Image (cartoon, rainbow, N blue to C red; front, side, top):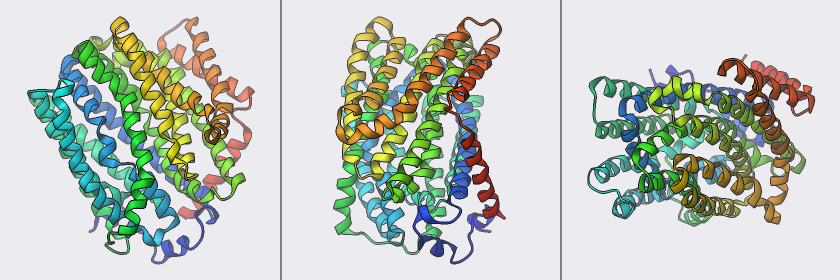
Length: 504
């Protein structure tokens, strides 16, 4: 039995062709399809987060603070080169394939050829530059092994068809399988007391399995093998370059703090920081899961300003409510979360998590802004906030890390993320409107979250009780200020009905 049949992922013949003849935002039952794909993505990401969190916890307990610091230093360094392997092709391909579904095979083939050269070059550049960053000897050997993961990048690109066709149960299932395999590998490595080399090798194997499954499952959804479009290659490259450069700058302000802690403090301090980052970053899968569903809709609805604004408005409001609810709970219960996940040896990570979790507010905010700008073909503006964020992060870290160590790095992350995505874009006419549109929700929602957290600090009881009380205050405030509205319930009910009708 084929993989597709066993997963019950097939669609009646001609259905895809019939649907593709109608613009995506005008197709019947779109709200239900968006809900279905969003639910699948969230469920899939939820399971993936479960396995990923389990792997992170076992890895921390298995390796200890110092070895976890080395592990984090390796992947933080490689992340600085990730932009070269992916080169921003994915959002551009999703946008173009959503508009030219019949040309999807050719567009993918073109991007895959370009990506092959770029991904191999990524590993070569990273390894050659490693000694300059202090990665020598054994650490450099680990870098070579870990870098093989980037060579697999071209095999992942065809999986973008799942997003374009709104069949995101494929991606969700494959991601869960990959994280499950990775978790199982960590369990085995832990039981045998394997060294860090085997941990890195296991991660590469899990990535290889994921890439192969993506390749196999995506091929039946493409009508033909595709050919290299020399005339499109330059366009794809030029449209992707601003996103690639943005990714480089983003990786600098997202990972340079770990490289600096490795160089300026110690791997033990870095290990505590990595433990806190692992928890904080688990929730970044949520805006990604939602925007994967919404991105194709934004791409084709941009021609209808009112419809486009409604989609964007709703995304900002929901994202800010979700991000701030997470911040309220985890900032209050940070000590308990760290103790349960990592044990007493990682107790210093608790105050780091209490600060870092608030950086998820600008992360959620940025996920909407990025997709809006790409849909509007304004991706050339994306380097602006990331450049500002990278410069701010490096500068603040240089001041705070020598004085406050990992806690200084945590504050540098929060401040630089906020400046990059919620302040910097106000300075430019082309991005001011979307930024103000988001801040209409971000400012009052974040204010409510801070108020709820402050009130909980004076409450008695266990961390769980205080976290629940803080969340209750936050949700009550959101309802009274109409940040949560009755129409949201109606919208969800209608979407559920459409989803049920489509399933039936």
